[in-house]
Figure 1 (cartoon, rainbow, N blue to C red):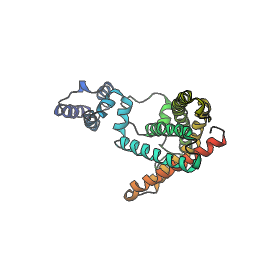
Figure 2: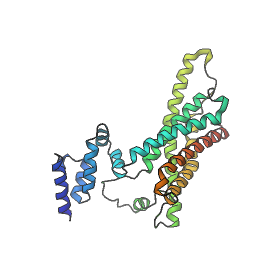
Figure 3: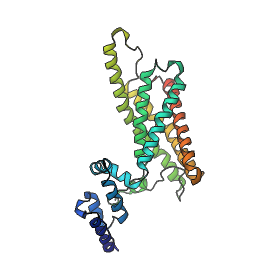
Figure 4: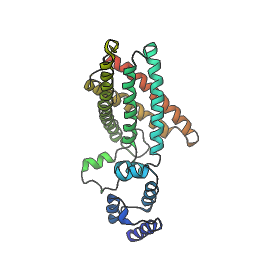
Length: 274
């Protein structure tokens, strides 16, 4: 079985004018273990021949693993970013009303968090095709056996489903905290530089401290974003049929992001971040 699979892979590579030695090192190791499949090689050859995407995947293995593990990764990422920016801006306009332009620095900070956060969430929750050998750590194996979301269809125990909510919440907190450190720091730097050159006309509004804002955004994502994404994914998987899935998914995720954006403005004001 292993030899026939290796022969098939070598044949595929030869037809493409390539060889096993030209595969990424972890894929070569997987081939030697008998853990590499013909479909993996076909997908990799197609990706490697794509301008820009091939270069990125060759230099960032983790990105390559997500593209291989989820052919819709780039599409989902583009949709989430587009929806996120549109819905977030709509929520900002509606929530701030006449104060929108007066609070444009807060808007810029929130939008930076949205863009970075959406990318991180899609990255974090996307299926990935790993070529590394299975972990010998029992805790790691148990975590890898958790469902993608608490309502995922499958023979998962109540303990696993509850653990998924907590584990995803921790991941969302880390994503939110990290994205805020980056996005809010950049926004704060730009505001400070703008005020330095504004003289007497500088904006009197002060952005929240980076650490306070990052803790607040991380907590918000762990509680609000985590619960909303769990429900959205569960609804999509258990209720929608394929005939209407694309349209309803688009509307559902737009609504989810809009509600989240409005909730964040309310939450940030309640805890004194804005």
